Amino acid sequence: MELWFTEYQNNKLAYGYKISKHLHSEQTKFQRLDVVDTEQFGRMLILDGIVMTTIEDEFVYHEMISHVPLITHPNPKKVAVIGGGDGGAIREIIKHPSIEEAHLIEIDGRVIENSKKYLPEIACALDDPKVTIFVEDGIEFIKKNKNTYDVIMVDSTDPIGPAVGLFKKEFYQSVYDALKEDGLFVAQTESPFLNKDIIKPTYQAISEVFPITRLYLATIPTYPGFLWSFSMGSKKYKPEDADLSRAEAIASDTKYYNPEIHRSAFALPNFVRDLIAQK
Ligand code: PUT
Image 1 (spheres, rainbow, N blue to C red):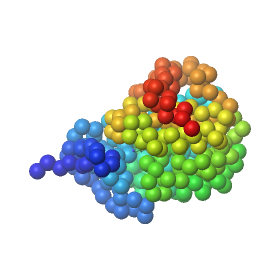
Image 2: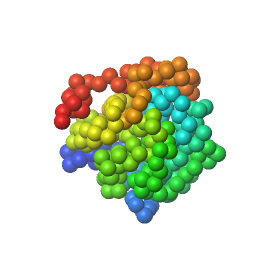
Image 3: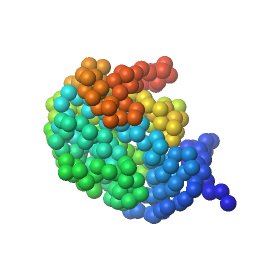
Image 4: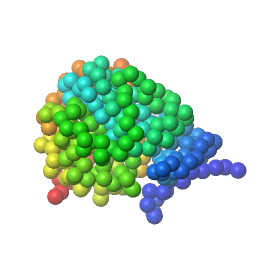
């Protein structure tokens, strides 16, 4: 008998993945967590029925949420990842020689533990000596830290349940306060095709807090609509002014990101331009 996992996007659209093995299932304090082996995309982490990451395409998301801000900032030393318990962003961050400290703030310790067990290719840097893990609510954590980080990445789940607060202006103000005077942040901000209702107010809220705001895109086949957005808020640095010789250096160790991708990711289709231009 064939086993399929169906991810429901809304009440009109679902994506199906043929599964060779269902490896793990548990109800954590926060969410249902599943690990499966899919035939098309390899091992997959699922939270509350939503695809979080897969072995075959995770590199796109993790490289783009990390290298774009870390190259935009000329000398990032201390960074924080809010969410991101699978460890993929951390793995990319520690590729940067300037990094001295990377903090991972994940609300659900079971995501970290299961990622280490089932997704070691992604979680492989979580025990690096530069990395400190805080199993805490990112919203509360970031409020306690002022003028601390060069770069913050918000690697959240979709804005459902506890993650809703990570898409609010109040949280972006806390992120602004937690950044140093020339700091910047990036958040994953969902699908331009399927989540217009999320991207528009989110981008607007970021632009009300940060003087420099940009949106960029990447193609992620296991995320809804396949085209995925990231939003950047920056106090001083602009991605278009980045020293791309540093991007070239990192690109010897990436599968998606390179200097041309850094530039072209900010080239937006008209419907996305219109989406973030509207008040
Ligand atoms: N970490 C990003 C998850 C998005 C799932 N749709």
